[in-house]
Length: 147
Length: 149
Image 1 (spheres, chains in turn cyan, brown):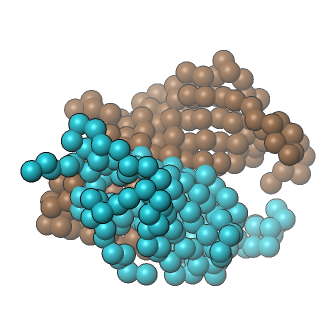
Image 2: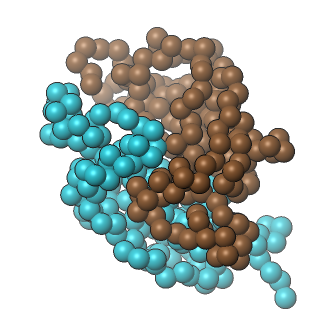
């Protein structure tokens, strides 16, 4: 779970699979904490009785918490050399307490302009193999020093 | 209310969002994101950010103060997609001037009929007036019907 290996920007190549990050299972306490920290106080995420009243089995995680996990992953991939200049996610299947989310990614494209290296990444967040709770892309920008 | 293309360009009044260390810390902790880039000045100084910044999704915790001259039906709104575009690092202590605007309204035909989409961009400028970031929220606006949660 702890920090993934940082890969030097210069070692990235197209189609490269990046080391995944598996988060600890989502807990109800975490949903309460995230609700308070993010300001998203929809009881769908924190109150089982409310969730059941609208036809769900119980509370579900905030989609933005899942994006937060992918954000952690992307920021770790950026390491010390790169900045995250663009990051997006489409929301997929629901995440429930007990689900452990795995973030994975691959390098889709690499370009270089004006002394900057740009890596386009494809990202997936899954609660089990093939069960996607989110998919997205990120752009990492890295200054290239020519010497 | 239903959506239509004439809404594109409608903009909220500007509001100020302060980047407060306690909120950033609480947000990172809730996610379980322990990257020192968000709190360790010495570490952060040696990164491409040249200083402490915020988790990449932190800006959502700021975006709910827009006063909009439109009456959305919140029950029909479902968060479909989220994007963050960073032009400058966001810093602890920044007072960002935020403005939310409708930047697109479009239809897409899916299995369950025509769905409407609403794109809201929140532009965030730092105190020098420089655009630091854009948070882009794509909302699925479901058909008005009974029984929707």
